[in-house]
Length: 219
Image (cartoon, rainbow, N blue to C red; front, side, top):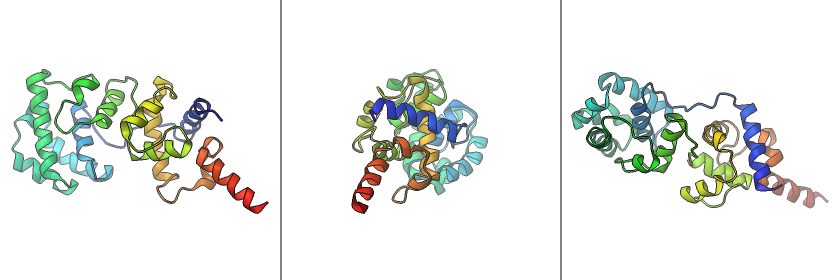
């Protein structure tokens, strides 16, 4: 099966399996998703959602975050891990948005990655979820599953993003990445994928190669 055909099939299969392709981080305002995603580094989304309830209640605007006390933010987000670096980045990114972008979350990838603590993964998430522009959010689930499907090679996020871009319909790419996260947590789990109940087995290079190898051994 050609990569393009496999990619389109994977998009449709995951769409049926997970019709609600939503980000698992909870937010009400654009800057809240930006901050929540920064907090999610090496932390579970569930923990971030708990922490953000109090954080977003105390600091409700970009300006309030820009003027926040560093020690107070550190205390509020401490359970997320790496809290000193994350607190410093959150305040600095909000200060930059106030000073450079008129108190708004910038709407281009190039501007977003200039914000302290923001890389391409977060920038693509913002572009897709907030501004509804084509985006490919390359996280560990995306890398692992698209490698298994045969749609990408290697673990370098930028290379994987560039490999996937010509294969995925632009209007589907962002939701496809959200669905990969859901599928990676529910079925295609790292080190113990449940291939026997995976809807993607019909277009998965790893499954096909493994199945053919097992069949050859039996013969």
